[in-house]
Image (cartoon, rainbow, N blue to C red; front, side, top):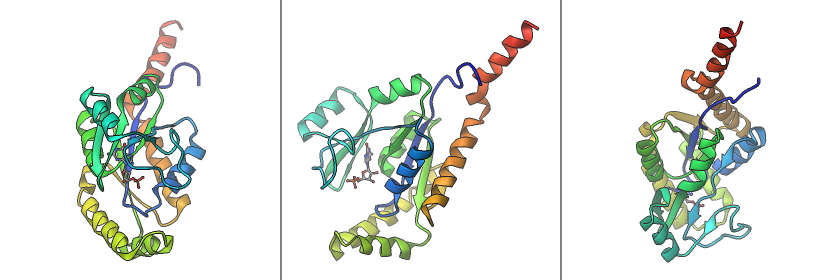
Length: 210
Ligand code: 5GP
């Protein structure tokens, strides 16, 4: 297909409880759709082993983060377990304006802000096949003690209450299935009439010269 496919990229938000396997699904998704821009968030939490600055997150101090809030540089931000997390407005705006789809992996408060500010954003929530499975996965990680795991499960229940805000619910019973569902959602979103107007305009211009 020639010509510009769409005027604006789609803003995609993916959320889900800790341990549901969001990162694995996202890695698989980006493998299938390397054209999607994954937004690297800003956070005040320290890097975990293996996390690289500018890749996993942009790691900043509390002062730096609060400066970004004051200067209106963030599309959304939230406090989560004592740390700030936020999305830079500039990078996202540039990508969307160039027609590139942008993926945010953020928690529910941030997702609510995105929905309010960008009503066209596509919000996807990932759940495990059962709550027992989530508990099993969190215990299987063996990196956290029981209190931390219980805290994460309680947090997951609180997050589940926000699911009605989302447009789509994906069940991660297996990574290929969950990735397939996300790809199908994005494919359908790309077929919306408003997304395909540039294609239609190209065709109509051709008709007038026949
Ligand atoms: P973690 O510390 O485990 O990497 O992330 C904790 C939570 O913060 C996860 O639910 C993750 O989705 C969320 N998160 C990561 N980046 C952002 C962001 O830019 N904004 C918001 N609101 N949440 C974020």
